[in-house]
Length: 106
Image (cartoon, rainbow, N blue to C red):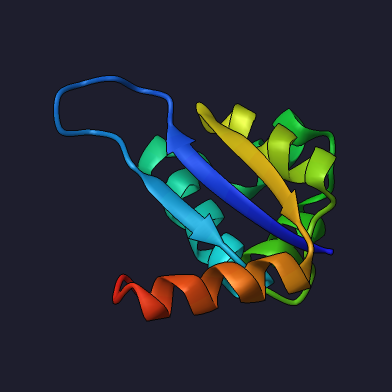
């Protein structure tokens, strides 16, 4: 199974918002770190909010560890964001990619 995760910014101020498609730990790491910095909180504070250790936050932010879906949801919620998780098979995703390429959209 391939997890495709979108992160939406919860705040609804005119041009603030968007979606990021996450396909690997390094992309999630960057999004998590950027969101934490934008919220102005430390790794220690995020760890407390999520119920994890600071070393967990460091491992996830560096891309060395991929969080469980539950932990990822908790971390984003602690940063005033939410996750939309879509689970698709790799075969289904490959077919979709071929179709998009054929249509010239990828």
